[in-house]
Image (cartoon, rainbow, N blue to C red; front, side, top):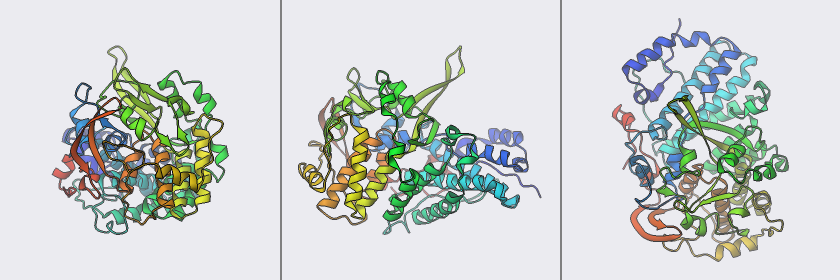
Length: 525
């Protein structure tokens, strides 16, 4: 009996009204019946990756931005994101799009898996099956980390997660319940461990095409991040090493070539996110304004990474290797003094798709790289710090510094130098900012060398992942508190009463309003 697979799963209540849903089903009658060849299933998996990104939501929620005041533009949506409010506004960067895009991609993965199973799981489809399993795990991984508390052995068995979809939906109005965070992670691990060994880079048309799919490097880097977030340090080391074949020297990007684009943020960003670069494991184009918010534009520039953060916590602050100017980085940092002194790396590429060239209307796209060699290297270093393998961690941190900074005489990191660096700072306060923030994780860390090494690796991760949204997840993992403040240039004008505390319910971003209205249990507030 033929089944009609309804592609939209939980995102139905957001993405389509009744008439558009009817039109959608009319255009794709019995799509499952068409999935009867390797080529058709492989082409379906192109849609197993979210077309909307978490970047703007999580970057604005993090401590990478300050409030530069109402003289700069904002929107109700960016104000809600920055203030950790329940988000009611919609846009391509809104939470309803993250939710819908992830569940739509999960539905595509599930549809491919069902078709493969009904074809008898032939070995010719092993690579497609592996990609579908890993892509399904990734969609859920985004959702659980955005819309739930961070994974912790103490609380995840009861913390609300999201619904883990393991099959294609074939009912018109299904009812769902939320799995716990632990259950979601258990499913993610199950899918990852089943799918990763089946990934085959030779199944893609060429190496550049593979960068838009879960190739071996991307899948291993994803696994490393999952295990890092779970606190399974040894596995994080193993998978991070596998992502760059335990040969880091062969994955360093051509920074000399990137430097040739230093006159243009957009050109440098395009080169940084290029599919021909070995260090880029997975490249993700999204419907998003991320490239303008965190690029050389004045659009919605009220909440940005400005001089107050750059000078005291990140780019121009004193790090484990010393203090550097914007030109002290191989990937030059850009500073825009004519606006509100926002300081940025060219990590996000802005592109505009014209649907009507005459009217000059169309869609804004942001391109980012959620998995890179550099971040995987720092993942391995962090996991080794947790294992107290300090020599191995220092080697990776030193190597990261060697290709991050322009100086030819970089100081050698040691346990002593890290301790001296960290001990030179008091803990951060909103009015006396430093790179050293109080860590309140739900796992044990030792005062002294281990804590100081973690401060150093979190500093490096913050630099490496600037503007890509990953800092928010580090804030959640380490229970870092944030207090919102008003700034002008490098000066802190005032500090608000809005503080994100340890285990604050707002660390789990509230579900989209339409999803709650449809009956799914909201996050506690």
